[in-house]
Image: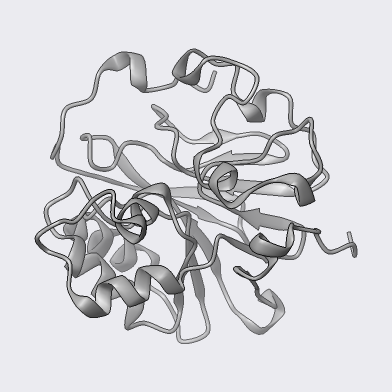
Length: 227
């Protein structure tokens, strides 16, 4: 597909597009939530080469034990990139002011784009409303989309009715295992809640996961079974 996605002016100003033909392996990784040890294990499992690319779906920070450590890993490695999640946005807006935040961390979180695209892929934190054109979506909607025509974790979820044309990789909504649909791939598998940290291997069409420790408890009603 050669048609580039069209976003609102506000979102387009915070849109990064990659040419993956200039990269080797390409991975998309789910919500890390400050779980540095799990991230280090996952990156070791991926055995990155110098020209590989890793894109995170946002929520690098909060809830886990080492958000600054996660920021340092992603910020200091040119092979790693991330979109902004709603937890980064809460810090940027001032809704949350964690004691671990450093001045340079705020600047980095503000620099994160809302959307990253490559080929026919969109990487956003929340998702998109399948009933509306992309250009009508606000920044806040892309960060928090879950069930725009339903009831939160009771669904139905946006990806239940989404049939393209773009392939959307997302986090935000916690699932017991990855969502794998033709046009939607969900990668938040509860890293901070004792689930797994999940990467999708774009070239080989397979998932790579590592087990994680429980840093916060979560009600079963807020963990979705994508089946």
